[in-house]
Length: 64
Image (cartoon, rainbow, N blue to C red):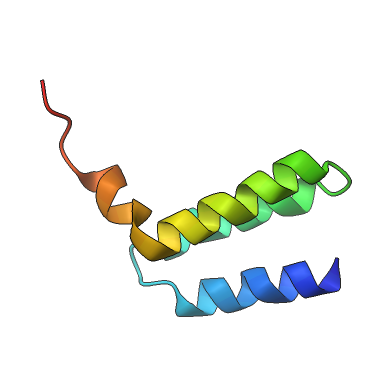
């Protein structure tokens, strides 16, 4: 458990100013979900996605 918290903390430190609020919220959700491995894994996966490329996709306009 400690290693996962350390990994999430380092992701917050590496996040850009635009990514940081999203990563912080995912970290908060993950912390509240202790014991629910599916939610914790989903938060880690979403954090990785946001850190790699997802934030640009989240901001992209939706085609009509």
